[in-house]
Structure formats: structure tokens, C-alpha cells
Amino acid sequence: MVRGRKTTRDIILWVEEQIVPANGAKFAVDVVSQTLLDIGSKSFTHLITVLERYGQIISKLCPDEEMQLLLMDEVSAYWKNSTQMTAIAIDRMMGYRLISNLAIVKWVFSPANVDQFHVSDRPWEILRNTVSKTYNRISDLRKEIQTLRKSIQVAKEASAKAIKELEEAKSILEIVEGQPVPSERPGRLRRLQGFADKAKEEEVTIEESLEAKQALLALGLEEGKELLRLLFKSFLDVLTERLPPVSADGDVPNLRAGDPNVTFPASDPEAATMEIDNENGADNNSQVNRENTEAGYTIGELEQWCLCTLGYLKSFSRQFGLTLACWTMRFLLGVFTLSSGKPHSPVCADR
Image (cartoon, rainbow, N blue to C red; front, side, top):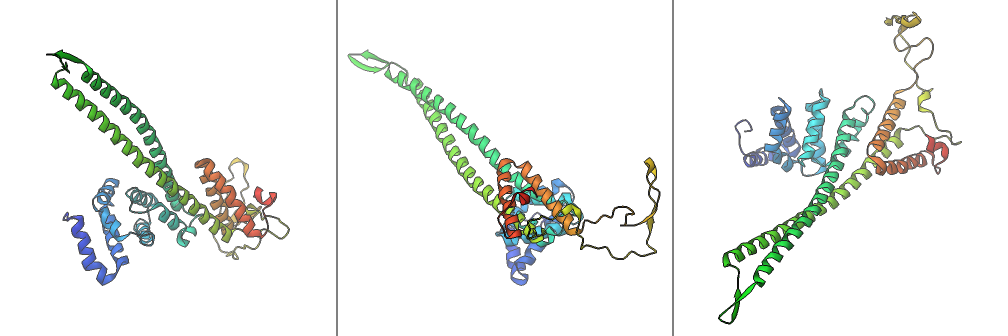
């Protein structure tokens, strides 16, 4: 139907009548998403064209966050070998309002993605794109409002000037047979009246546009606030679950020191060895893979996950400025209060 260039309405009717009753809404999302992604897989342009032409089908099938999460699972599964195309597809879907930014944050912090935080950049790239696009919208709206305010001032001046010229033309009279009559020609008065009406209409139009943009800005600010709340709540949940607890004495575990409880399985005596390059005077001793003759690499996977996640939290705070920094401080204090069961201390703050 897509290759036959059927209309969006025809495809929606077919899906609602043939697919959903027999197989359910989730199966319908699977069919539609995989079809459109496959047709749009040739290039970025193909993907954009398909989403622009048939995005309403996805919007119809994914009206809530639950279905949008399922849609992102489908996108991730289709592009499992391409981090770039996964990020691009989700970013475009957010741009066309097929997926909400809150749904993206929830998807990034779903268990399957959380387990990949320290081994894949895909969830972080998608999350960064989402937050950036949300705040770029707010920034664009502020710029547009500033421009409209300047335009209103210009329109008011033009309207006042046109009205003044009209009034002056009407006020010029001459005496004819003892009676005052307008001395200006009727044609010029009509033109002046037209100019005045047009200037006033343009002023009203710009004011209405300004009100609409201000309403969108207010909505965007609330959306951004909710996005930050969800983002840091999600960070709080996953880090509280996995960060090593603070000891009863208030000592904070050093994540970079490694976990003494983490041990590697016994090495195979026949395991492959790796020759150490003796360049720059390095020792030429052979060693078994994952073993070091001097200082073992003892940082476990959990510590790596914590260090990586905390590093991205720090990166987000730096990129998005003071607002996120304030939230970060509240978040960190909350983490250490919850993990230790005590009020935060300077030691915890240093961590």
C-alpha cells in the first residue's frame, strides 16, 4: 500500500479494520513501524520522506507513552547494528511529534538500556539529542517572541502614522457655497483609509501571533521542567540502586579502587598469551589475557557502570548550565541521604 502510494487515510482504515481486530494494537505497531523503517532505510532523505508522508499512521497507533515505548523498541531492534540511524530515527520522530520527550527519557532508562550505559553510547546520544532539542525549542520561541515584540512596535508606529495622515486629510476643509466640505479628493481619502485599516490589521495579527508564541513558550517551559524532573529522578533511581552504600562510619567507597569481592575466574593454563611490545623500554614479559604481572585491573563491571553513569551526569550538568547544576546538587544530596540513611556530609559531597 505504501509503495502503491495509497493515502494515509486508506492505510489507517486498513490497519484499523484488518490488523488491529485480529492481532491487536501492538502487532499493528510492529507491522507499520517495520514497514516504514524498511522503506526509509535507503537513506536519510527516504526516512524523512516516509515519516512526513505517513507519520500520521504512527501518531494514530501510538497516542500514549506505552505505545511510544513500544515504537522505540521497534526502531532499536530494526537498527540494532546502527547507533547513528537509531538516534536519527528517534530524533526525527520527536521532531514530528510522533514521540514525546518524556517517553524518550523513560525508554532510555528502561532496564534493557540501563544495562548498556557503560558499553554503548546509543542511549546517551539519544538522551542528549532529546534534552538539546527541548531546550532549543524554548530558545527559538524566546527569539521569535523578541522579534515579534519589535515587529509590534514597528506596526504600531506605522498604524499611528497612517491614522494621523487620514485624520489630517479629513480635517482639511474648504468653504463651498457657505458650507464646509472636504478639500481632499475622495480617491485619496479611500486610499488613506485602506492604508490605515491594513496597518491596524497587521498590528492585530502580530499581537495574536505574539500571544500564541507566549502560550507555546509557557507550555515549553513546563515541559522542560517536567523533563528535568523526570531525567534526574531517573538518574536518582538507577544510581541509588547500584551505587555502593556509604559505610556506617561515613566512609565513601572509592569506585576507582575496585571491588575486592570481584574476582576473575581461574585462568586456563593454556590460555592465549599476549606478547608485550618492548618499545620505549617496556618489559618484554608475556602475560595471560586479563592478567597483569604488576598491577591487576581490579575495577569490576558495577564500578565501571557507576563511573560511566556519574560521568554522563556530570557532562549533562555542564552542557545545560546552571539549572541542571542546581538539580544535580539536589540529586547528589538525595542519593547520599538515601544510600547512607543519614543526612549528607562533606565527605559525601566530595564524592
